[in-house]
Length: 102
Image 1 (cartoon, rainbow, N blue to C red):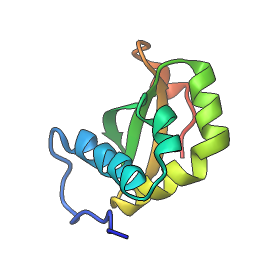
Image 2: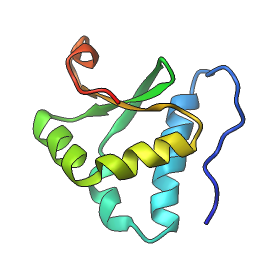
Image 3: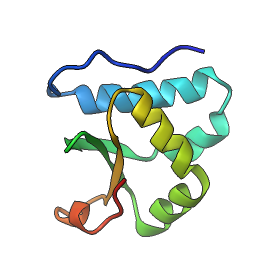
């Protein structure tokens, strides 16, 4: 199994997408394609306070993913060297303040 640990450094533009793509790549490489059906719909939109911020297409998606893949997503994001994951609803500029955090 390949490691997801990234070298510690200040977050650069594009790093959020790279880290999320590392997580999705790990799922693909480790035969967890069933999870990709859902998780590939999330988009990395920011890094806040060491957390990867993912945009969920809607509230149902966010709830379903949290209930079914929450620990998996959290663990993968932590393997990239971040503190965890936070969610926003896509299209809502201040939803990051309303959605759940790690």
